Image (tube, rainbow, N blue to C red; front, side):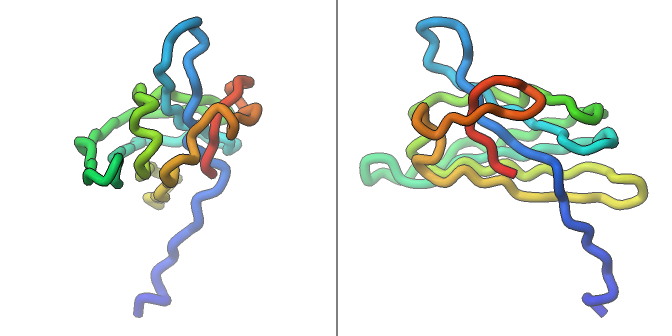
Length: 133
């Protein structure tokens, strides 16, 4: 029975951590990037960080974001993130409507993967950042 249920794979959607461009600021921002050729609708993003910092367990508050629509080849700023949280795993669960199907995918930045050394040029944004796809 389970094999009869279609579960389309999410492609061409990314979550990126992008340093702010203002001089002297240590904050980064998390963006949702729609690389698809069609808009995303009824988008729900849940975010949470978890792990250990200096031997102490750390879990961040679960944040939820809802957005009605994200056009094709566009991006959306979700939330700021402090560099102190790069030492733990940061997870973003993205769900959205694709026609008559609800799609979802988990994007995980393992501890230590968001850093200045990991920056690459991001599509759509045209800025450096760290992207999970």
